[in-house]
Image 1: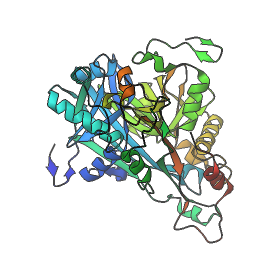
Image 2 (image 1 turned 30 degrees about the horizontal axis):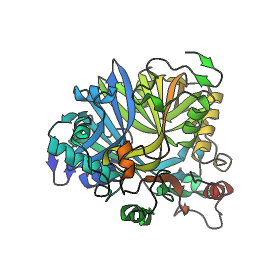
Image 3 (image 1 turned 135 degrees about the horizontal axis):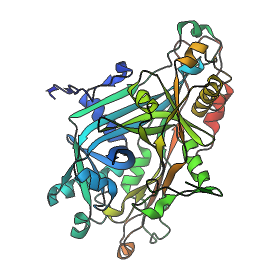
Image 4 (image 1 turned 90 degrees about the vertical axis):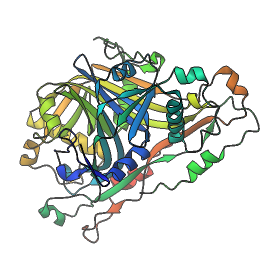
Length: 225
Length: 225
């Protein structure tokens, strides 16, 4: 595939065909979706059977990384170069149309195609592990005890190049049949957003340890859409 | 597979093997996850390539249904009986451990294995379409214009039996290495929940149409976890 400016030319399998008007190939849009979402759904094939497994991910530059135990079924298959599809979805709202059949959801999703590659270099692994923790909570890496050598070795990291990928986005108000706009039915969007609640201290937390800055900053982060 | 009381005996592929202590086979737990989530991720195989596609779903009794255009690639493959894996995931919180490598997420997920079956009976289709709209927003079906015959015909519904499925749940505080509990690092959980925002009326909404009861009731629904 080729890159043109900040957009990507989708390969055949990465081209959005159904509801093609919702397809987006702008790298900034794709990156923003991958960076906002905490989890992806990783699809692989095992003896002809598809498996779809939710995983924490992080994007670093032009790659998306997942991690796991080298003994897990998914990581083993991915490490053997199994073809994969990684999908990331953010739900943005309920779309309430005047007609039942035009109800929908506002969402932003990304599909990534390709084979993963295990990261083996120790320094590169440490950088991705830091990015994973920072993806869970920005600023957290410096609070926590760093990984020991044995922990780094016991963690497998698999990266996917963001070469073959596309986004699909639905936003805005419902689209009704023209005749239905005259109906006396309320129509519009109920926005949805993931919101953090009050931090719950570990029952074994020692006395005198305050909620750290990264947590309070996360709680203050604006989240309206 | 066999059912014993309210739990299911998982088949081999539906048995949670990695982190097996997180596996749950209780039908009430599985149903609650399917009913709370608005979207699933449907995995199928197309010429050896896995595809993972986000879809709106609804559970009706012991089946999970998705819908789509009969012309979509996914619906075509599913209608031909392609082996599928449908995964539903709810994200419940950030798990902040004292050590970087024990950071995690609290979540509840369900994996369903099997082949879909297209629903062709007109009355059964209408009942599932009603359930889909009610799944988006309880009470909405009676507000909206009902489907016309042509709309019902132009919508394909595919159902999956909840025979081969399992849930995987992580909840509660972080689990640190015993030695790390003495570290002066805050640890705990930041709960996450999907919250609705202020309804956004369709720009083409006619004057004098109030926000309906189903929307205001949805906004009032308690959502703390």
